[in-house]
Amino acid sequence: MNFPKGFLWGGAVAANQLEGAWLEDGKQPNVTDVMVGIGSKDPGLKWNEETGKWEMCLNPDKVYLSHEGIDFYHRYKEDLALMAGMGFNCFRTSIAWGRIFPNGDEEEPNEAGLKFYEDMFDEMLKLGMEPCITLSHYETPLHLLTEYGGWSCPKTIEFWKRYVTTVFTRYKGKVKYWLTFNEVNNLWKNAFVAAGALSITPEDKNDPLAISEKDRWQAYANILVANAWTVKLGHEIDPACKVGCMLTSSSVATYPYNCDPENVFGAYQSVRLANFYFGDPFCKGIVPGYMYRMWKENDCTPHFSEEDLQMIRDYTVDYFAFSYYRSGTYDKTIANGADTGGITGRPNPYLKGTSPEPWCWPIDPEGIRYVLNVLYDRYNLPLFIVENGIGLDENLDENHEIKDPFRVEYTRDHLIQVNEAIKDGVDVMGYLYWGPIDVVSAGTGEMRKRYGFVYVDRFNDGHGTLERVKKESYEWMKKVCESNGEYLEEDN
Ligand code: BGP
Image 1 (cartoon, rainbow, N blue to C red):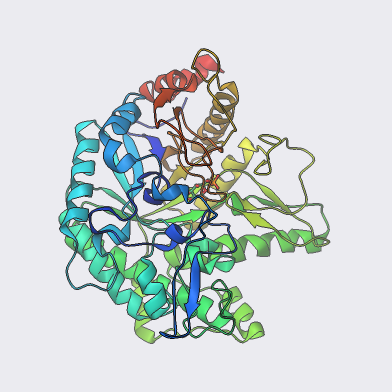
Image 2: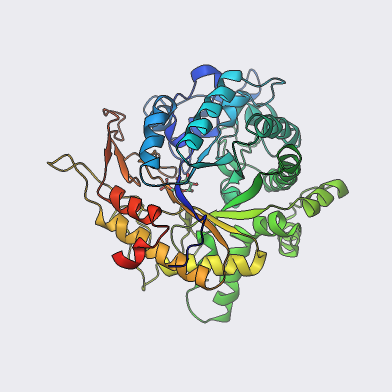
């Protein structure tokens, strides 16, 4: 195989999907705390006529599994040891911004939060795993939204600069790989979660998700500026660290459904409006013309000052990190759909799905080779796969075990295509499997959609012992990581 020496092998999770302790040690609610899953249409917010603001109002009939997660907050040493036991040399998680600045606009940070992550990163390093840390994984402090409108308000840039300066300084020398905004390119369809944006002068006081296009695209502009500041501050505070962007890039594998020129251009345009519209500013320092055209035609052009545009030009990212789960198709005759896996569209007759479940995604290993080549050709930056994995409805068998050959097949087939991309000349930094331990699903807010090489005993209704059990795939992944991928040759 062709995996370079020093290739990063590991797994990825997110604070809001596994830590739990949602209000412990000073933390205040963030965006995901008021949602059962990021796809839910009714966040736990209600308009208060008295104060003239949105306020948290959770639905008593719903189970917010993320509030307890898998109790990683108290069990992370045990869990990180399980991860290192697979030969991981890298582990990705996020810092919950609301543990460091609970409401987001405080002058001083919360020491308990800073200490928690310092101990966690030290534990990773002790176990031989490089921390790869996401600064915001859908975890914008809720107060920034209800008080200011979140990212649609330029004040949030200043709060963000204070947050990243604090963590870059505190974790200098510990964290080499930083990621800015997880899958921020979901902004086009989910500004509330992806961009932490909320209208504080709502037209519809019954729908917190209703946001004007003007506010949506001003959030986009503010995030581009904040991303540039993150690169600048990261390099000034810790010259040894690398700052990358993180986009969902299943959408790059959007295939024209047939050779109708309108489907060919339509598929290409779909990729630009779902992925490159962030990749181009983050990696090339330009706000693309196809965005100005779209804004003009819809009368929602955001404001960029000359300083903003200069920052965006001067401070582009060091690498491009992305998630890949599946491909999609574009057919002009039907509307484009999307979920946490990426763009949907008409089902691809050449691909089979993961499972009969509603979250059944088509399996397309060649798609990851395609995405790696397209992104490398466009941006010529090191590429880091920081999410790829398969969610399955699994349960312990009578021997208290889980045999998961499907997960081995999915992961092997994708890694073999990553190897093909490396042979194509693509500079691939590493592969982090999404959900190496069962976590709360982002899209559906379920425990039932299990990704892990390690099972966690918790169920959708919230009950469970939280016991950890290695699945059969655990030993397979250990062989792959410890052999720097060579095992894939024997095992194929
Ligand atoms: C991505 C998120 C992750 C993860 C993944 C799988 O969008 O970055 O948080 O959840 O999707 O999606 P799901 O959990 O919905 O299966």
